[in-house]
Structures are given as structure tokens and as C-alpha cells.
Image (cartoon, rainbow over all chains, first blue to last red; front, top):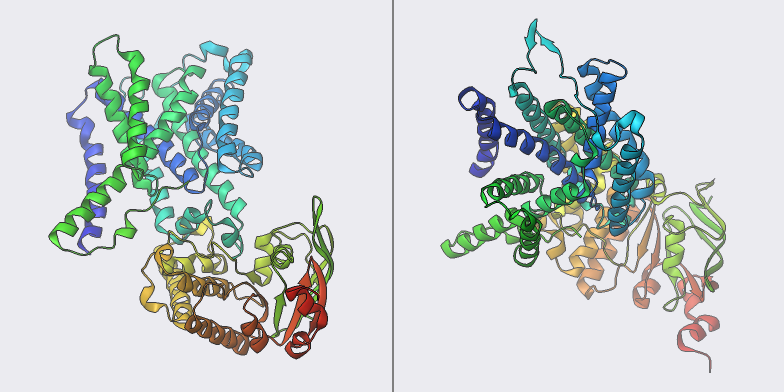
Length: 339
Length: 254
């Protein structure tokens, strides 16, 4: 099929362009926005994945924050080199998620959401109160820069932000590859069926609870890694970086993008980032209206495009093929949202 | 030896005895009918055997092994597969994907293999699963609908699919929960032929809960009747048809 070839070519072109970007474009402001976008995509992919198995995780920034703290503390307290601390910054949030999952994933969807809000409150409180370890409200400053040597070549993380740009880009690409691979496979079909037809799935021999645990831990593993890129990048970790509001914004982005494909998570995150960029052009003093605008967008999305931007694209395409007489099955594209 | 045996199986919900001291026995290849008026506890019995509900007291013995209290996915792995009255297919997946998902556990490919196995292995695995799936679809005559979204299919076709999904797990004991409800006469014949083929080819034992008396009487070898959670009669279809207690349970006493 012709369209499936484009589905491979276009992402490759975008990624190549992103890799080439810093060589001819180095506005720190936009590089910064892109780093945030790439890490946001990593978080959104995880939120999408957990959503696909039937749970909304509003505490994704907490696992992101855990990763940031873990990498920082390992470098400062135990003097681990960055490349040792980096994988641990993924593993430890994943283990925390696993323990959390033993309680949370036994709940029904809505209760899980409330539990993630509680978890968010608990971890935030822990970080603020345990001053000797986490540094309280002020956080930890400065976070040491990584010292990396590849092929005898020192990468300078101090003088330029470009290495961080590449790290976040590579992390985003790897995350996307993993999730697209998963959701393109049979296991992806299994995950998408969890949360809607659990009894039937268990009846085929699949341990639904184990699959939920894997999905949650994997998402928190990547969130932790994202945090481990972020912390040295802005060279400070404070609890105020990892809030419930941020978690809700990620969930909102996934919803706006379309929650029946990992591509929706990417589109939604890009959309939200673009919106944030637009907000910065608004006159000063309008900042307090931003949540209102976001809320309005959510309401409009739920009302007029419950399948998100991706679903809207599908509907427009179907409308066009209807008009121009080419037949495509509409059921494939216009699926109802999960939950 | 019986394939499955329940001994004094009892389930009590708060203030309600759903199943009381139920003794059932199915042999390999046997077609057992489990009948009774609405609310008699038939589906509860299925939920107990398949591990969906915890047992209050009593034992479930499968192939000589006590499986009481096993989780549903473990029970399924051991070879006891059931169908459900409702929600028997994965509605958002295509017909083919439904069967692929049903075959997923048996394929032995888990999360780690999915991510890291080389493409050649992946093609091989996917090829085997697809071949098996298409074979099952062919048995049910659903080959042409392979790409259709399962939730859009008519009820009868979905029922047929749910049997195929159950078959994908290679059951040694098949629990069918009202498989005939909502089917027209022709579909009932298709399904009965399918059940006949399963028994002949695989020697699968079958317990069927069903309200269609004609189907039960003409096809089951042995029938157990329960009412208010208790077994009130058992025997061959002829014995059941003439049993006074059974007639009373269905029609009320004079």
C-alpha cells in the first residue's frame, strides 16, 4: 500500500530534520522548547500506554521527578558517573511504579486516577519534608553536568545546550520506537483489549494484572529517564517542577491528540506545546486565563471530537472519500475512545 | 476418571445461597447440559469453576488435581475455557485480531520477545499464529470477515466468534454459557455442527448452560438440573423429560 510507505518515510524525515536542526539553527529559546517537547513526548507516550490498559495516570511528572532526583542524588552523594546513574534513574521509578501498581492496578479506572493524585501529594510531601536528602522546597542546586567521552571525544555539556538537545531527541526516538513496536505487535492488540474485556482476556490464559504492571512500569521507566536528562539540563531540581497540574496537562494532551494510537500522544503533545508557545505571545497579565483556555479546549474536544485530532483526521478523510466515491471502512478509523 | 469433578461446591453471597453442595462430573468428550430456571445458579457455577468468583466451600477437581481458588488465567492455561453470555468478543479489534489475541498466550511470545526478537523470528511467530487463526476462522466459516471490526458484526456471528476464541486456547473442557441465545435456527445448526466437530476431533468435554430445551434434549448426553442453587435431578435426556421435580421446577406444582 502506498500510504503505509509514507508512514515510514515521513517520521524518518522528521527525525533526520530534528537531528540536523542545531547545525543551522541555534536560538536557545526554541532549542529549549524542543527539549521540553521531546521529553514531553516521552511522558505522553507512557500516559497513553497506561491509558490503553485502562488507567489514567495523572502522576506521571512524579515519576519524571523521581528520575531527576535519583540521577542528581546518585551523582552528588555516591559520586556515580552519569552513565551509571542514568539507567538507575529509569529503574528506580519503575520499581516504585511496580509497588504502587500492586495496590493501584487492582482498582477500577476512576479509583486509580484518585490514587495517582494521592501518590502525587505523598511524594511531593516526602520531597519537601525530607530536607536532608531532597533539599526541601529549594531543591538541589547545582546538578552536576554529565561527563561523557565517546570514541576519545569529550562531549561538552557545560558550554553548549546542544548535547542535551540530542540526548532528549534520542530518548524520544527510542521511546517512540519501543511503543510503536509494541502497539504494532500482537501484544499491542492485547494491551488495547485490557480494561474493556478483561474477563475474556484472562480466559485466553493471559494474566491481565501482569500486563498492566508491565505497562505501568515501562511508562515510569521512560519517565524516569526523561527526568534524568532534564535535571542536569536545567541544573536544578525542585519539587515545584513536578506538579499535578503538569500531570493533568499531559493527560489532556493525550486526550486531545486521540487516545487510540500512540501517534495521538505525539500529536497531542505537539499541539499543547504549540499552544503554550502561543500563550507566550499573549499580552502580559493574561497568564491567569491560561487554565481557562485549556479547560475550554478540553470541553470543546470532548464535545466535538471525542476521538481527538487523529480521529478528526480520520473523519475528514472518510467524508472526503464519501464525496469522491472511494470506499474505505469507516469503522477502522472512527473508533470510540477508551473509557 | 472424570475430567472435572466438583464436590459439594457452595457459593454464598451475603444473605443468598447461589450454589449449594453442587456435585458435577464430566468425562472427556462428554456433552453435559446444565439447565434450570433463571437465577438457579448456573452461571455462578461457571464463575466458580473458571475462578472468576471465589468458592465459599467445596472443591473443584480437574484431572485429579484440586484447582479450587485458582485465578481465571491459570484455570484457562490448564485447559478449562469458558464463553460468556455477554461481551464474548474484543469489539474494537478485527475478527482476525480477535483470534490472534486469543492465541497470544499459547504463542509463548511475551513482552521481552516482542521488543527484542529479531525480525525473522517475529515473522515466523506471526506466521504460525496467523495460520492457526485462519484455520480456526475457516472452521467457523468466518474467513471472509477476517478484516471486519468484531463489534460491528451481528449477534449470531459474534457468538460463533466467541466459540472460536475459546477454541484458540485448546480447551480440554469447554464451558458454554447460553451459546444458543439470540441465534436463529440456521446459526444454531452451524454452532451444533461446530460443537460436534470439536468433540469428535479433540475429545473435548463440554458443559453447556442453555435455555433452549430442544437443543439440550436432542444433543446433550447427560443433563443436570439445578434450582435455587441445588441439584434437583440428573440423568439422560429421557429420564429428565419425565422427572416430576424437573417439571415442577419449570412449570410449578399443581
